[in-house]
Length: 327
Image (cartoon, rainbow, N blue to C red; front, side):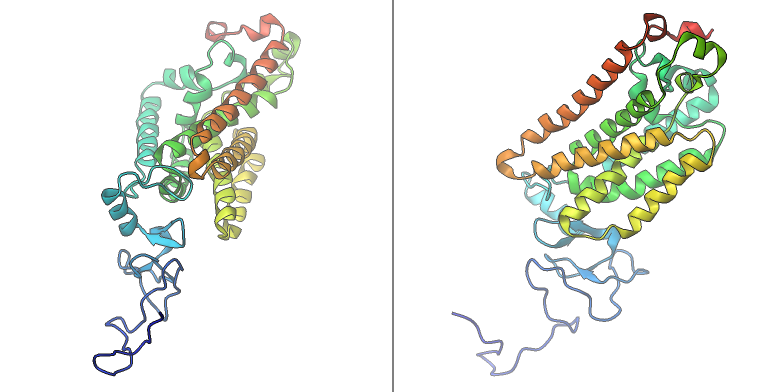
């Protein structure tokens, strides 16, 4: 039986509340009528309302829910009161604080200080295809290093990570976000290896195959993976990524316009991030949620497989190069 929007006890038509606006319809993000502001950021206008509490939420405070958009406060409250709650993509719901993002930024900052203090840190942990077979940890460690000669490199990457992480991590859950970052970083180094050509001893001696000996550092490959994942996830949610295409294009252009920036790592990270996000979307539902880790493991296994095939195609004298060969 439907209810009439008039008060039966007083016979008066419904009156708006103190905000002057009707309550938000359940499950539907409500546009703010007039110049509403985000209660958490009073200096920002908000055009979307939380479908749970009805308060305005600026883009930074919006979190995709199973239906509509919720604000960070409601997401945090739900995580505390419902320990088994899941995000829209099947990850474990948190209080909205991007802990993994902050941890990665902290690790990169500490490693950067260590690089500034000793050049040996960069030499021991940067990635170069020539050392990938004998020192495979470099596929991972390079994603936490940056150029020690400038602050610009680490600042740009950490700002991008902070911007993407506070949106993606609460959406995916901490474990899925960490896996996305690490696998994308590895994918970037794999692309560097595959696109470095097929070196020969003569080519290494004459400098023709310098790409095989060029060190690569930086979180750019992993961050481009986050860019790619954002495109896939936003498309699934029906949200626009128009501005992100321009951002990706600008960042990609740096790899071609400026020296010592690896466009190969950007490309590899982007493709890997897209594939990982596709796996998260495909296995987001409760009955197949457990398969997402098998899918992400499959992506990692494929990266390992193509890398092993690449190295096995090389002569032993090249494949077995290690740090001792560099004096």
